Length: 155
Length: 69
Image 1: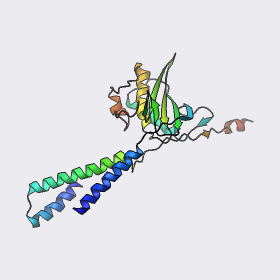
Image 2 (image 1 turned 180 degrees about the vertical axis):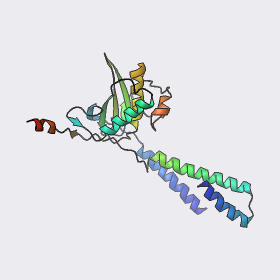
Image 3 (image 1 turned 45 degrees about the horizontal axis):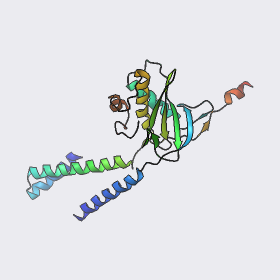
Image 4 (image 1 turned 90 degrees about the vertical axis):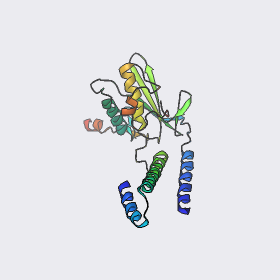
């Protein structure tokens, strides 16, 4: 019985400390901004993996045959979350409805790279339909969005 | 894992004379306990193996231009 109490106490402590780790702090400093693969003169260590994830998301969504451009990316330092529509989230996608459809993924440096898949679902949906689906109604978030599905922690 | 626990309980029950219902209840309890631990580790990301986003600038090589000159 004592052993069971010890295990339960340990679990509670782990849960409580994990909650402290999950506090979101805003990342406010732009550390990289440009193309997903690099901006001509400078690239970054996660570029190749980010492109791979985004292209896999596109293939998963059945859009490989379409020649849509990759999203741009903005890496933010100084925190573990980015401001998105007035709230802090692990990632954010902003559509750019200019002459040519485009979009920017904003993510915090040090964040989980899997968030790229979720944001790329927004991007490819926007490219294909003109609607980035901010409410995550498309089933593509479940099937192609990686582990960040509909948690509401990203846009 | 559950089959291993089941076999251990079968052996134990043979000697203690416990009923299959007790064993089923105990297996459910073990299953819930394992689920709780796995969920906790997933939630905390203690053993997360996924890559982290790294935006440390890497200047692109200009070796191609050097070769031409």
